[in-house]
Structures are given as C-alpha cells and as structure tokens.
Amino acid sequence: MTARLKIDFVSDVSCPWCAIGLTSLEAALQRVAPDVSAELHFQPFELNPQMAPEGEDTVEHLTRKYGISEQQASANGEAIRARGAAVGFDFGAGKRKRIWNTFDAHRLLHWAELEGEAVQTALKKRLLKAYFTDGENPSDVELLVRAAADVGLDPVRAREILQSDEYAAETRERERMYTDAGIHSVPAIIINDRHLISGGQPVEVFERALRQIAGAAPSDVAQA
Image 1 (cartoon, one colour):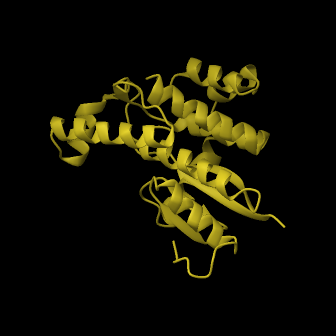
Image 2 (cartoon, rainbow, N blue to C red):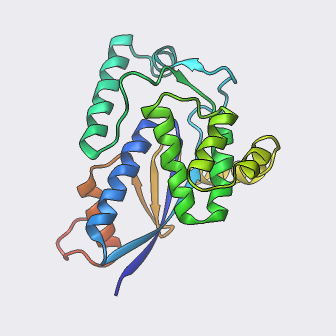
C-alpha cells in the first residue's frame, strides 16, 4: 500500500535555494515511488516584502542585506549555479540582474492551488524558471498572465485577479501563519503538519526523510 504524505513547501519564487530544494524534493519523490506519494502544496513566503515596485540591483541588494562584498556575492552565485546544475535546475548565466517584489506571484499561486495540485506545481516551476533561468520580472503582470496560460490556466481570469486585490487577504493570512509558526527562512518543507526540513537539501536527505516519515525506511535510519 502506498503511503500518502501531505507536504507544504513554504517558499518564494525569488529564492534560489527554493528552486534547488524543489528540484531535489521532486527527485526524491521519484525515488520513493510507488511506496510513498505526496500531496504537494506551495505556501507563500516573501523574502523582500518591502521591495519597491522598480526592484533593486541583485548585487547591491545582496551586499547590503548580508553585509558581504561583491566578490563574495559573485562566489555565492557561482556555488548556487553549481548546486542547481547538480540537481538539474538551470540558473542561467548571470541573468538575474534585479530582485523584485513577489506578492502578486503568490496571489496567482494561491488561485492555482484552488484549480488543482498539478497546475499549482506547474505554475510554481514556470515562475522559478522565468526568474532564475530567463531573468524575467516575476512582478510583471504580463509575465504572470503568460505563465498562467502556459500551464493551462485561464489568462483572462489571471489578469482579472492580478488587476484586483483578489486573494490578497488570503495570501497575507497564510504568510502570517507560517511566520508566526517560526518560519523565517526558506525553503521550509513541512510534512504532515509535523516534520520540518529546512533548506535546499540534497536528494538523499529528502529521500531518507520521506521514507522514514512514511514508515517505509529501515529501522536504523536516523531522524532527519
């Protein structure tokens, strides 16, 4: 019998470790199938909720926010690209020039969840690719409408949502729920509302945790 897990993936579409973590988690889910399957929900988290509409230069933002040099920011970026490549996610070649506000992307993802788990997952991956691989602006209405259409959602309905405040209250409420629960960095992967895995972990870490939580792991596997 297949064990079914509920997974809440708390993340931002402008978080590189979230892209790595999701790619690793999906690979782990493939490894544990058919013994373990998952119901996957993407939950909102904004790394930069106060970001101005015009965004900010990525290097300037990172050096100011983390107190690092441009050289350190560049080295960190190269390390992230290498980690992404190792799990099959393409960060592109220096295309992520600016940091943007992502609240509207989260509103669209909230709507997508109501339309179905598969379409929300597809939209999440489409937005991660748009930002990290293609260097596009995830706050741009035209990009968001196009991304929605690309995964089979109604672009007219997507535009209606984005040009209104629809799902804003619901998205804010979910953001508060997770920050109030102590989530202050992402990705945060919560399994069955009880087990937390933090960060863009390797595939093997996710696989081990999934098997153990599902009760399918050998008894000598350590707690994740």
